[in-house]
Image (cartoon, rainbow, N blue to C red):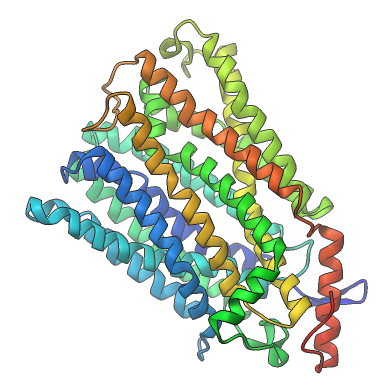
Length: 490
């Protein structure tokens, strides 16, 4: 679907195409949600030490970042009768499915071989996961280039993620834990099976959504796109694109904040120990689902009206201040384990839910907004040099993103080990102590707030606002119309 606005010929998508393709991110987020509970499987069932498990998970994310440039090169070089993106989505999902099966059978192996085996399985997992997630970022360039339409990705992604992480937490905390009493092997068998089936279905729908756009005519300048073949050329492109560098740093620190807030161990510490009711995590997630979706709709409206950059900054500010507000909130409570109850909702419970909604919904919004922003950076490069390197840009971004977010499980492991949990992670059966209280506030609110502050400072130097992007699309449209200008001065 092509539409002319202000003499610019935009490649627009149908709403259902955006909605279907966004399922690709949800399909990978299902595995992200699953791996969030790997600490309990690895330490409690496979018998691996707490610090070792945290280090392995951090190393796996670091490895994910290392292979991302290679994945980007594969995306940029892939051309088949089935397109550039669809084959990689399907292959990535299959490899990821195989990897989680391998990961969660580690306990069946002889104890001396378990560490080596789970490392191998995690490497396989990151290859498949990176293949599929990189497509989510890269394919935004072909789905739509209309600055008013690109933010619509956030509505679908926000709704899907809210349903996934809220429904998933209810499923685990209120159903599986109630059914199996703790993080036992049968619990993981049921959880892994459910995730595999849902992810495969969503990946299939995503390939349908991108099918009509997965064509060479939508890649950069089409037939006139400048080829980028050597590592040196890629490096020159990356080094010369300051907007990519700024977006990567800003989004990476925001990702670290959201990764810490969603770490399963942190959730157990906050709800299961500090508040004394782990099932409350699912109940409150359900209670704030609608307000969270309203925040998503507001941020999307703001992005369409004022641009992605402004929506990003406002969201990050709101999330940071809400996280900071949790400190006086908990410090003023006499007994946190009895202060909040959903059976008799009082003022304290309402304040907690408001802060939880703002910190998670606004604080997590930049992570979603950054996906269409990567497409903006890619188009910005095309307008400057005529090169289409969406795959490499998406994965270079992921490289730094994974490098920074790989610190999340390491930080959690080091903090809990420092307060005495060296052989096992804190569980719902542990009593609240002063060290646990302090560690929970630091991990759930303190470090995430600091990360958002860094993200905000960096984003203030990012220049691709809505007006700039309209100029970028106008230059690309003129180059395509002429069919001869491979390089456009910016």
